[in-house]
Length: 92
Image: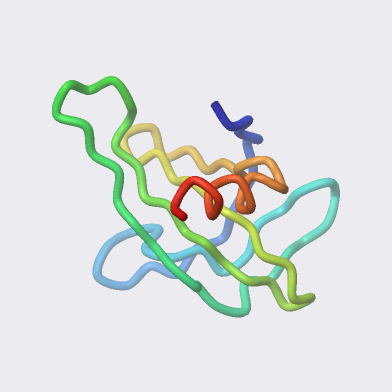
């Protein structure tokens, strides 16, 4: 299981609230989102996991991060850095 770090975000709100992240704060630094590389929705009919949106993003400094938004509780998390590589290995 990947470690989740609670973070504050500022989001674009279009069709729905908190539609996509614009920036997030982590380790006392503001990280501006340059682009959303990928996004997916997690839903579990057995309700073992909270309904969530995931965003693979690139920041203005070129770093990539995976953000999780738990929709029901409106909580944002950063999946521990380095976990993107783990996910890509699992996908192959």
